[in-house]
Length: 315
Image (cartoon, rainbow, N blue to C red; front, side):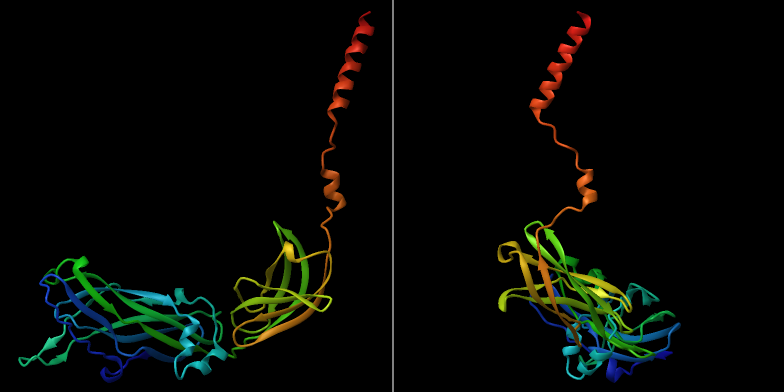
C-alpha cells in the first residue's frame, strides 16, 4: 500500500525569523500534520509511506530522520482517546525502514515580491509488518534533525533550529484485547531491610501491555502502608512477577490483609489476599551446608593432647 498526502494536508510552510546578528540565524524545519493516520495494515506486509518535510531556510539543509517510540500522552490529544482501548504496546522500531537517510531538504522558493511559492521534500519510508505482529493500533514518531546546513548559513553552533515532529498511527488487522488476571500474591521474604510481596500477573489478552502492582496493606483492620511496584511490559500470554517492598519498621510478625490492584491503563485486575509474615528460617538443606563452628579452646586442647601422645610414644 502506498499512501501520499496532498500539499494542503501535509505541507506546512514555515516562516523565516529575522534577527539582527550577521552570524546567528534562526530557522525551522518540520512537517505538515502533527498526526498521520495510516489506516489498517495486514500482517506480513510492506507498506510505503510518503510525507513532506519543509523548512523556513532559503538554503538547503541535510536532515537526519530519527524514529522514536511514542508515549501514552499521544492519546490525550483531542480525537485519539478512543484508540487507547485497542492499543498494542509492543516495540515496533525495527518495523520502520528509511529508504534514504539523511535527506537533503531543499530551500523554499520565493517570488520577486517576496511571496512563497513552494519548497518541499518528499520523504519515503517503509513500515514492515511481520507475520507475528500483534493486532491493534500502533504509534511511533519521526523527528527531523539537521545534520549539515549550507556554509552560507554560518557555523552549526551559530544556528538555532526549531524542530517539528510528526506522529504516525496505524492499525494491524485482528482482534486487539487488553486484559490480565492476578494468579497469586505471596510473601517473598526479606531483601535488606524490606519485606517483599510477589504478585504473579498474567496477560490473557492479545496485545502487549504495561502494568504495575499497587498494594494496600492492613493488619487487624488497620491500615499499615501502601506500596507500588515498578512498571513492567507484559507480552500476550506472559507471566510477570511484580515485587512490592514493605519497610521493615512498619511490619511485625503476623497475618496481613493485602489488597492488590494491577493497573494496565485501560483496565485493572484485583485480588484480596492474606499474607503471613514470619521470621525466615533456612531450609534443612541449607542448614546442612553450614560448616560447624569449632571453639578455639577445643583446638588448643586437641593440640596439647597430640603433643602429650607423641612424648609418651617416644618415651
